Image (cartoon, rainbow, N blue to C red; front, side):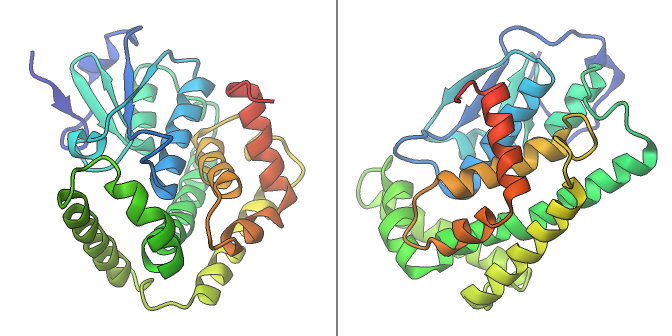
Length: 258
């Protein structure tokens, strides 16, 4: 049976009839020498979500994970005959198999959850891309070195240049490329403030772990634990104690890294 990419097809009832297998693999770039801030955040978010659902998986690191992915983005999981990339399609796939932490939410709460997930994707993801690929100091000291580390010369240089051009093209289309660092940080602060107000003094946004908690964890935890020449992004996020506490709570509960 050929592999099916769920980024290009509708999840059918046929997949729901099959139980979650024990040999699911999550593919991502190498953590130590290769992975960059935005990808690390995305990979952690998907891992956290699967752990919240108590779904077994094994992490497999590949230097070419993004080229193996059906969407060109990481992480992706191989589950039986299906290949699913990124958090929302993975969450939809898991829900189709009856593993949905947001299943107890009302329709209104699910819509609200998706809106906040869109906010995270539209702000924190773009800010991470901006810091990694547009901020000159971070690009030269970290991004260029790590991205090229798995390629022989001059392929690493060529691939990094091509990827930077693609990221810049995306940021320009979203009107993020021409922002100043101060404007980027202001957007991040506004995003964190909205998330912090919604979370309040609760352990999780909707009282129980959902993909929104996994997504926020992935980005907040990665931002505050990744050492970069530009420290202002981490400093901005650290000002929101409730979000930092959420990230630490999920890390300790699901990743056993107290």
